[in-house]
Image 1: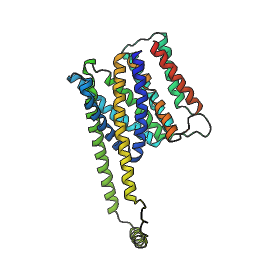
Image 2 (image 1 turned 60 degrees about the horizontal axis):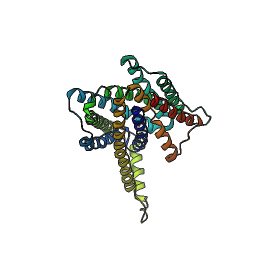
Image 3 (image 1 turned 90 degrees about the vertical axis):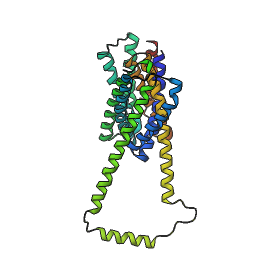
Image 4 (image 1 turned 120 degrees about the horizontal axis):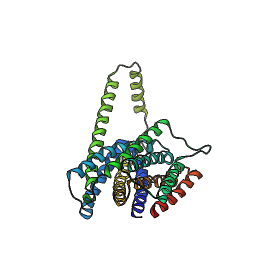
Length: 323
């Protein structure tokens, strides 16, 4: 019962974090948005450490660090695919992959066994995830091949994160999550720095390349500058608009990090309270929060079959709670 409640609560909070992360990634880029969110999550974890506590042991720190590397890859891919969109399809696809991976690990490697209600609950949950992501209606928005590949890769990595973090001990509390955030923030900022340097070098080499069209373009730019009409008083300048957009993006990324850290704590407690397979399958319900927010805020269309999937998700949660 406790595993179901904690895992499903964590899934709902995860969905909100993914929605915020997708919006931030559209403005900042996936890498920078994820890196900023990781730092915000780390600060939240450190602030909660005195309340939640935990023993600092090398094995738990090691598993936490490994989960940080895997999680950095998973979340970067997730936010990248959500930025491409549509959120209401790609997010459930990642959820399906993230549920299957730890479920197979828990049942085949971990030798977890379930009664009839548990088996039915897991089956209904997987069907629910598929229905939430399946949109057969004519005129429905379809994802690109790149978005699908990013979503599958993200789901596999999220499943790997579940497996790694499940190896931590109960006595460690949230210490593994602190190690997770330190490593993930370091990896993501290093990746962002490398990508930025590469892009700058590429732009520099392109600027140095000879081009016959450059003088004409330069003359056109100079002429446009001479003939430009000054902005009317009270009109927002492009610089002010960019600053406002950047501020909104940073707020979204920081809020995403805090919400995501909360979801991580809930899911970790859910894993420790019961079976990895149950926690992972219920944790895969996070698209529910994402697609509902996408429908309300972005006006993305939710198909009837997706509503059926959400209803089945509640049924599955009830079955697993009883099991």
